[in-house]
Image (tube, rainbow, N blue to C red):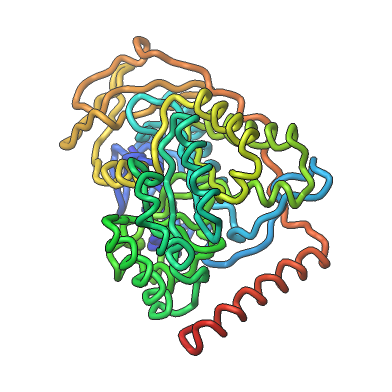
Length: 443
């Protein structure tokens, strides 16, 4: 149904991320939508369309931005001061959503639904997870964070700073029992070189493994990401990482490095934490509204919602965050962990299927049926689910449901005062300088 032409490796990865069935190469008579990327001329594309179905539509894809560049962005301007965080220059999640809208629009024009793999496990429309970066908090704050998880009925994903909490790990066995324990760092810094990042992560992994933990993933200090960090993760055979300079509020994906998808899966999280909201002088009610809008938007998009914070802020605003987590859990159809989402997504990446429309029905062909993964069909302003199993499904008999209104698009603006940008840059350079002094020439 969908054929991709072009030599840009970013687009096959994005289509696999969405989970649409597609083939790469020249179209055939079954092609109803031709996607053109890379260095394909207009005449070559027109010739290719002539080989496709008579009603074939064409969509020219722009060149997607490479990950790694970071910039300070404003996420909310309704607080006394702007809520800002340093994330990637380009919003990859919004670019993916634009592509999905265009695919749906062009197929719907010919009364064809857009099929793709569901974004959440099982039959859930939404899923919620909470990540904790331990950083440099005290033992009392770690204990308070575990109580918060128990009260909310959640399993947190803990990313441990072993320089700060390695000596406490034997005493924290009960705190981390039954939780999702991953690696944050040993020294709280991300370096440019693969070797320096590898030394940092290796030291952290050794401490965790000596205490009986087997981390499968990481989350970088400050949300940083660069090819050196990614290469160190791959060399240490870590399966996933969660770094909002690579991406945020998006589905899991693999960054393209050197023309190939990374071996390390990125599991994006919402980048704004309590500290950023308090720095913006947000009141308790403003914080509640902010998190509610994030959770509801991700739910309306039928995408996982991942929030994160630090034990220091969680302990300080314990009652407030207990309300936020309780509401997020109630609003979500299911809960999981960052590690659990990464594991499920890796199984989802292995799915291969075909979808064919015939006489008002969709026929599914697959060699890998999976009870935990469903196919979602999007048609105009509604959607329906069918099992990931071979079969024929009459469209009229499906349980069609309307799209939820995601509300106004969040403020994700680059427009900040020069003073604010310079201040953030100055603080970052100070952190890097302190790290270099500690590590000598390792950076």
